Image (spheres, one colour):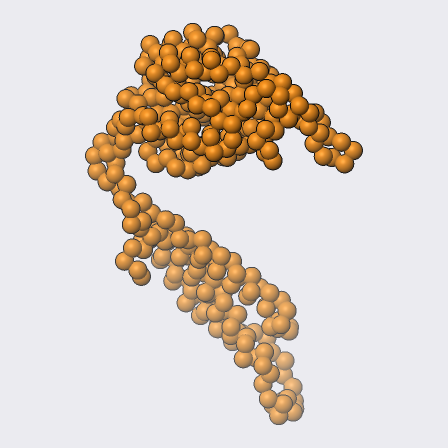
Length: 336
C-alpha cells in the first residue's frame, strides 16, 4: 500500500474473510450439484470437455473479487494531500447581495444574460476561496437570506446554481438587500467583514432607503463594495418567443444609478466598480479581495487534507458482479 494511502474505516476490512468463504461454499455446492447418469457415459467422454467447462470455476472467482472490491470501497481508502491546511486561518466574512430582478435577464452579455454571467463569475469566485466565510443574500422587490455565512463552498455553489429571476416579487430593493446582508454580518467576530452588492439597476422598491442602509453599514464599520452590472441605456431584453421557439429580443431602456452605487461605497469605505462584460465582473470581485485586510477566525495547529479514492473500487465491484450475473445467465448457464 502506498505510504500516503490510508483507510478511514479499516475495521471494514475484516469483511475480506467473506471472499475465501464464498469460494469454499461455491466448491461445496458444485460437489453437491445433481448430475445425470447415463449407462453409456463413455460415449460422452470420447467427445472431450467443452471450453465452457473450464470457464465455470471463473464464476465464483468473479463473485469473490467483487466482494473484495466492495469491501475495500466500504473501508474508504484515502490519499493524503501534499498540501497541509493551516488552522491559523486568515479569512474574511463576505456576504454577496445578488440582484434577481427581471432586468437581470437583459442580453447585453449575450449569448448569456446578466444573471447567468453573474452566477458563473460568482461560482469561480467561490471556487477560489479557501478560508473566507461566504453568505448569499438575494433580492428583487424584497431581500432574503439564501445562505448564511459558511465554509461549505460546495453547498453554496449548488444554491447559486438554482437561482432564477421571476421567483420573488419584481423590483430592486437595494436598501433592503444591504440591511439583510448587515444582519448576517452583525454577530460576526471577524475583523474583516464586507458586503458585495451586485445589481444592474436603480432602487425602486423596499422599505429601507439605500443611503440609510449605507449609514448603518458605516456605523458597524462594514464596507460595501458595489458592482454595477450592465451597460445601461437601451439594451436587448427578451420579449417572448417566436413561432420557432427562438427568443425575441427588443431594445429596452433599463435605468441605472451609478451615482447611488458610488455614494454607498464612499459612505461605507468600500469601492465602486462598473462591469460591462464578464471580465469586468471578475476584475471587480478580485479587486474587492485585494482591498481587504485579513483577520484570523481560528487559531492553532495544522490539518492534512485527504482525497477519497473509493470510487474506482466501487465501480470495479459493480462491474465484476454484473459480469458474473451476465455469464451465469447466458454463456455459462448450467442445466439443470
